[in-house]
Length: 124
Image 1: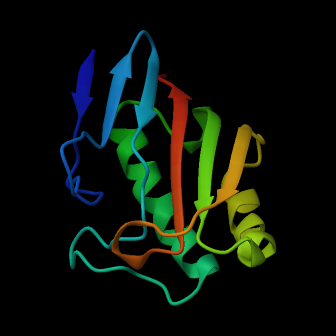
Image 2: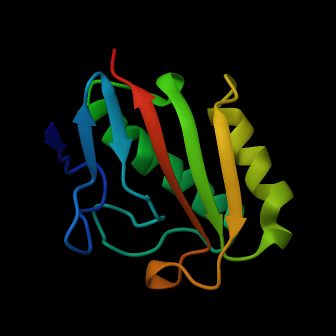
Image 3: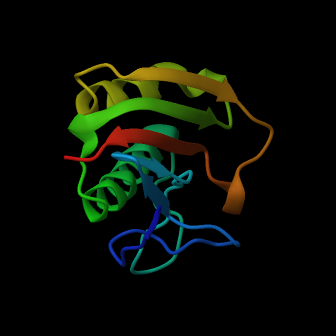
């Protein structure tokens, strides 16, 4: 088991790792739309935030020796299920391989984010 860390994605805001690799897989923690340089939420709506979240997710996956193309499962959290269609448009651009997915509405996300995604991917 190996802890994955990169400065190209936001640092963990609690007692956890950005990701863990084990047995040929990487398991990411949930990524929210924090710009890793400014430390602030990026994007005014769910679609813009989803873009930033996926950029962060990609950075963590690459640090582990994987990529978005190797994602086999995601869990997606939306502050408002009314954003589902806009979120799906962004998501579909980045995950054409259609990994398994769960998507749920939650009452709140860290730092007031509208979107969070965690993933499991195969390490290349």
